[in-house]
Length: 249
Length: 214
Image 1 (spheres, each protein chain N blue to C red):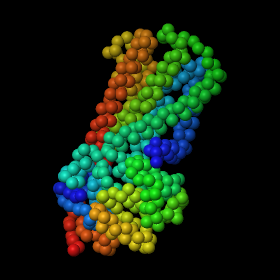
Image 2 (image 1 turned 90 degrees about the horizontal axis):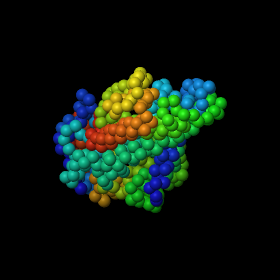
Image 3 (image 1 turned 90 degrees about the vertical axis):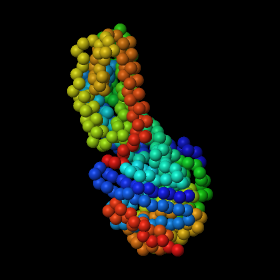
């Protein structure tokens, strides 16, 4: 009997049970994308604007966090499954991998629809211009933004689940609320970011529209921010295996 | 094989669910945990399984403290609360999925266990179509199919019809002869008195060892 087949069935079953939820969220996000887009703008400009639209980000990250919570609970409450995992590290690895897989499915499916709706609102105008602030084509910049957005989308739910395992439910809820408030209310920097010391330090600040001294400098800043985020996720993941207080909620 | 529970306490926020519990479980015996609902039996079993960490004290499996190593005790299988089977899969497919996690047994062993518990006729029926008793028996099947050394069953006879209760009891007595540690919990004293060599009574977080059969 092959192990991978078993995992595939589990994934398929969890996926099937969440298909209605997924459909509702994809429709909501597509509508936000459609109505927040400007029909006078090209597809690429509208796509770029969507990544810095706070309400889109709030709903989008909330969905990914809810999805992560559901998957984590499915595994943690399945005692028959848990007892067959050798240790908590193995169990947590499986949970994290499945959160990544499911959120990746969600991201791919939702972006196919979101892009279609933006394309529709933009009257299929895919003209490629120079980006306002850098000497770079706007489609290149949009792809960079998409990449940055996907990395954030994958890391943040894992960060939240690790916090949930280490600390109490209250602290996790507080963290989520602060993060969402930060996304909603943090303002774009009014100055051009030319120094690493001036880069945004919060997730909301980073998801905002900011102007850097060059495209290359924005890539470097993003790279460092993601690196810090990955390090934080890894440290919290290790701690969550050692100090899991999930049963004390 | 011996399980030693030393000065075990468990708190949830400010509530003491278990206080300074001491107990031992040895091979070739059936142990019964008796107490009203909410007396801490399930929490105690979850600590034995490694799902919960004790607030104080320790659980040693032949002197090994698995909780400290963040590991689950090997060769221990348990039925705790309602089994989380996948409703669209058949009874057999559900057991097959669990068996594939460690790949210790083949299809034959799964079918044999289902046969022992009179589930073979229903093996291709989807889980959501199972009756409460059948669901419980499938839960017991997942515990027994991999031939574990330690068997933990929380309220195993819930919803099971009388004929099947007899079958399960017979199987447990057979397993006792094979030198297994069997720990059962129930709020029905009669079931426990019939099977158990040693009974632990749970009341308000305290645990008392009551009797031992000769």
